[in-house]
Length: 280
Image (cartoon, rainbow, N blue to C red; front, side):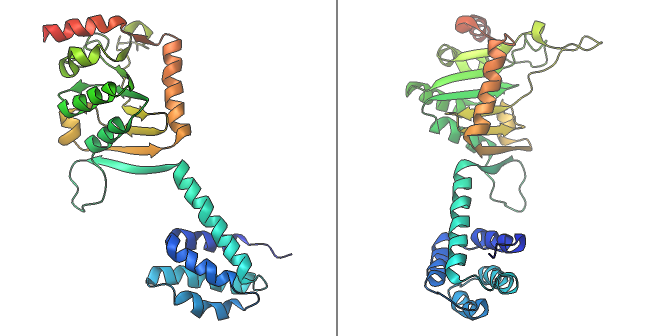
């Protein structure tokens, strides 16, 4: 019984990656209609369906390896291999996809989404719950507006962030100055208390330096950017927007465990934050 060699499997994978679905379907139909035929005889029939050079090259390489390593396999077997590989690739993209997010100079005009656009996309898409973690939060009116709209449609919003007091003065402004009392009253805010943080020999405390957002347990945004106007528009920042249930759930579980073990504490009624807001 002839099996697919690693080299032939790799060529099948490359074709399904290179050739778009509609064109790949045409190739599969041609292959399915052939009982017995030498791979070399199939090449002209397949290549004439391919308008782009890169597609033709990928299919030509596949046919060459097919001819060399498994010429006894007929067209139907190859069609089934291509169909199976394409299905697996589609499912993989549905279950795990990612895109880079960037703020800053972009001389090559690469098609990367801006940091603020990616975060706003998550907030506006949220239907059930939203978790946001950030070190600094300051002067982000568009994000505040999007968060208020999310809360109005029933989204549960949790925020984990530094405050000037909890950070031992590492940040000058707390979230109240940007979020305002109305938003804070309708969210759950958690902080990392100083007495839960490691301290070095010089008495310096650890920082809550993570920046991420999770939407509906399936979309995860990880970034170098704080929730500040500078980070969203002026700095060079990079992040990644990931669409995957497993990874998003891991972040939620990590934060839930920190809350359960008391490392992250809920600010009851957000009283201290509201006081901070009144003072500003």
